[in-house]
Image 1 (cartoon, rainbow, N blue to C red):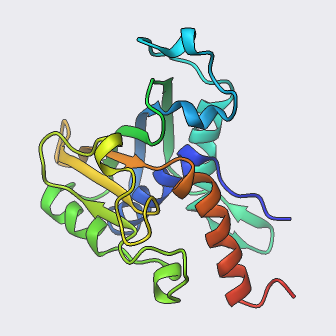
Image 2 (cartoon, one colour):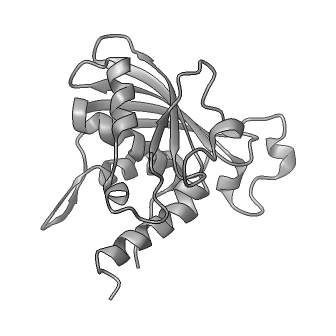
Image 3 (cartoon, helix red, strand yellow):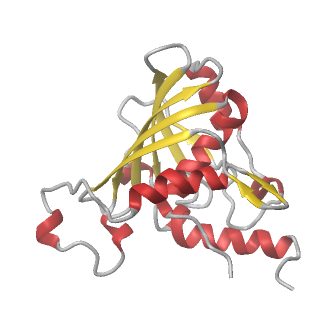
Length: 211
């Protein structure tokens, strides 16, 4: 049995990886706007969520703060050594059907230059792309330069494998040269749940780990 990541943490870790590898992360502050499908079926009662935002999802902040550190950590003989930076999360359930929108503020070891960060994100290719796995999108991270994007309704199915790419936008400077802000959309039931599980199985099969 293999544990796959929390749907919110999966998209977050994907966006953080190229930034962490190239610039070094010190601190991440993220605020999530999570679709009702993330609550499963029957999910959130309609009279609770219609025309409303719920600023609490049980155990979610703890998962978002811990799981990306494990996914971005190092494997050694003792297990996984988590990545050494801090994550602070605030989570919200919002009245969209699919797609978790996340806005974050990052502090980095090196200068955060928005054009360079956009290139890092666009150019990132992971092992699923190098191995050409069936569920792996050609571009795991898509960068949009439109001012009011990404949006759940417009961007949650982006990419060559619909819903498996994360769309990042609004990349801009922070309070000092070593900080920045960005927003991204990740399809929670595709990239974050079912698709992530299938991709994991494909990777294990290709590596001969399934017997």
